[in-house]
Amino acid sequence: MRSVDEFKPLHGEVAEWRRYLHRNPELDYRVHNTARFVTEKLASFGINHIETGIAETGIVALIQGEGGEGPTIGLRADMDALPIREASGKPWSSEIPGKMHACGHDGHTAMLLGAAKHLAGTRNFKGSVALIFQPAEEGALGGQRMVEEGIMDRFGISQVFGMHNMPGMDIGKFGICDGPILAALDEFDLAVVGKGGHAAMPHQTIDPIMIAGHVIVGLQSLVSRGTDALQSLVISITKLHAGDAYNIVPERVEMAGTVRTLSPALRDFAEGRILACAQSIARAFGGDVELNYRRLDPVTMNRTEGTELAVKAASGIVGAASVDAKIKPLMGSEDFAYMLEARPGAFIFMGNGPSASLHNPSYDFDDEALPYGIGYWVNLVETALAS
Image (tube, rainbow, N blue to C red; front, side, top):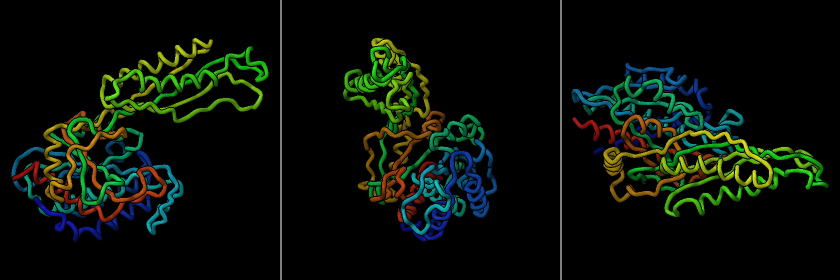
């Protein structure tokens, strides 16, 4: 096992890469400059097998170890930013108005590049490592597209691993758990349809605003009274629009939200009961509903063998006492879940210190965390593919 001190000499160079990426954020699949930067760095490390244009702008690069024949494991980093105006005040703040790396994907990309440079120079493993640089993690399902375009079979990947920084967790610490670690994500648009009219004569209308209020409360009862208190179901109404005038009861109310679950059975329950609950309430008042329900990310599911490998690799960098192997699952979601559906592996969190929360305008990835992430990737490869 390698200690973090072995990777501190890379810190300055990798921090420069990270800050360049931070100044130049790009969204969803349109990460053209980021992909070019990554490709050029990989080539400069002497990596010959680099495939680009996967899921439009994704990249997979293969490094062959010098320990002989063996399996191939995948390491994934996401590259895209968010449509947020930055307020961190850092010298390397975004130079693109309305776009910023508010989730640390600049750090994820830089750490995997740092690991690539080390692994390409040492090749102290058997088999191969596939470096996966993914676009469009933030809601556009780039991970799903890379899987659908066949990266697992094309590159012979037998296990796949992901990592994400965690604000509030100390730098030099890691957190992981076996089984579900992040929730499935679904989203829905729900319209309540009534009968419009004059606000002074509500008895001549079917008020969709009043109905929508009952629907919102009713949907929360699915959580508090429809599911086991020890299960995890989150239904959040995040958009609501109704009417444009003071004296008119509108015809319809538009609302939208998300559903997060940790089990397929609960996911099925939520989808079916949201329609039944909203429809029953609306019809009781003479109205109706229209529902468009979409399943996005599945549950991010760690497998036991992958989790054990991840714990061992992280412990080698920071010591077992700094690795929490039984963190509670989080109700956020990750499209890395599609890769873990295609192949076994694990997803781990790495401390980012006392920074602002993810998706906050003041967030910034802490460069002091870079050697820990690089070292984790290297230890993981050299452990999983030991010569």
